[in-house]
Image (cartoon, rainbow, N blue to C red; front, side):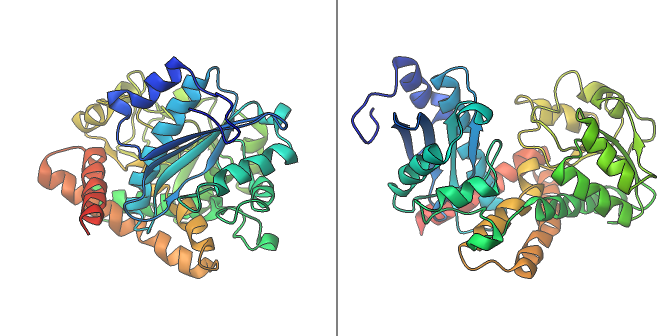
Length: 366
């Protein structure tokens, strides 16, 4: 497998990753290399059954090419499910750029990446992700018309954290409705792990709804921003302390993935898990462990879809009110998942997967 100039950029290990049985089903994987800028990137297209693949660009210092390919494949598949459940006319794709963005990111590299995406002719629409920002997408868009997550000055919607947090809040309201018969969080105690952009906005929604909020973050400045603005918010030392807070009703992981694992679930005091972080379940089986403990899990890729709803709308001329109305639908979608889970006797994560797979299968038959 080669890049556009014919230079080999893969290995037996990478090929093994591409064709592993548990990574199957992807329509296309493109390995990109530009020696002049130092670009090494992977673009994975999982499905275009519902429309052009849409997903962000992650810029990360992967230890190996194999690790980068594996991450791109996992993330692309997740975007197929997320976009299907968000009701978008988009399939799932993801790109990863290999390298430390603090050290190797440059205008030349981003332009080269834009040319690589453009070579796919619109099968993949890119956006921001970990390590890439609105300003980066403005650069990429100079070479690639299929770029979202741009600044308002460049015809984009800008920061997507506002609608991401709004969608998570709607998912949380749905969980409260399902479990307690009332969508309000008033009087409930909610623990938010990670109060960066999305978590900060989520705290605002929760306080406005009358909830009691407890937060933690590894970055002191993020905690300080929240407490300076909302003095009534309680702070605990770390996530380990947060998940053990007495009287905790809802746990909202809004930082890194893998927040729910074999160590966390047995000591979690909350009755609901609903947060913005991607890939919250550390491994298969955690969703059953949560259900066995009577903890209601709102699938992450469903409730955090406000951001992808926003960037998808850029392709049609961004309208915030239209996007917010669509993101509000996360409430009904989450309730639908809980109802399907109860009906089928399965955890909500499995129910969400079934619904998404059904929508993609129906689209393929059309």
